[in-house]
Image 1 (cartoon, rainbow, N blue to C red):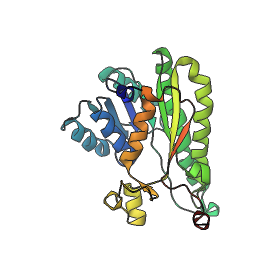
Image 2: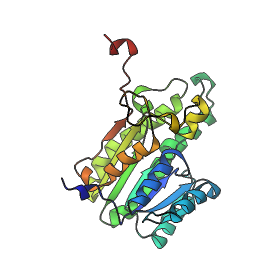
Image 3: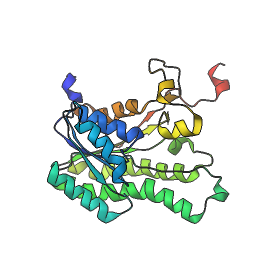
Image 4: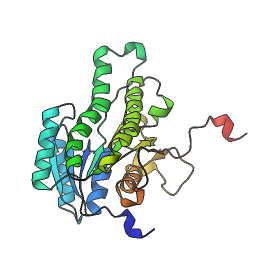
Length: 260
């Protein structure tokens, strides 16, 4: 395989939920690789600093900040229209925006359940449905859904999140079958624990605490997920369709089993 099989330069990409964490790492990586990127989340004040840093640095790709709530159909339509006018047709769409909160099942209200499912699953549907219209008319594209190992393993006291991400995985696999005829590649990633601001606030563990050279670890870095995302977006992954890649470090095997 040629090294340029991993090149994604010259593309236009939208990454939802890209004001921080994994999403921010992806737009920064893509811009470094010569991709024009849309940095988006619900608040413009959160995405403008990320876009400004990219545009003020040495990245070859441009960054366009746009506020968008993925639960709002018209807001997504507006984002797609503005992106197309400023950067050109969308080649890559990353469904990364998500949300959750910790609570036992019996304490999750109907509103709480609907909110988490609406953001994590329905938001993915909304974005995919709308960008799919453009991709089908433009001879294809790539969609990558950022899921979670919670979709596979479950997540005590985050059952709403786990259920929504499980639905995302099934959407990835099923839609990949349906839309293959349009030359639209659809794959996903299930990250394990990642050293984001959320983990820092919950567990007191930051990126500076992670030794990237160590194999024996259960916490990854946002940039490591960005690497997997670049691979899935590139021609190197041309024979991957409907697959959700697990990136979790040490497999989640019970501790007692590891040493037997």
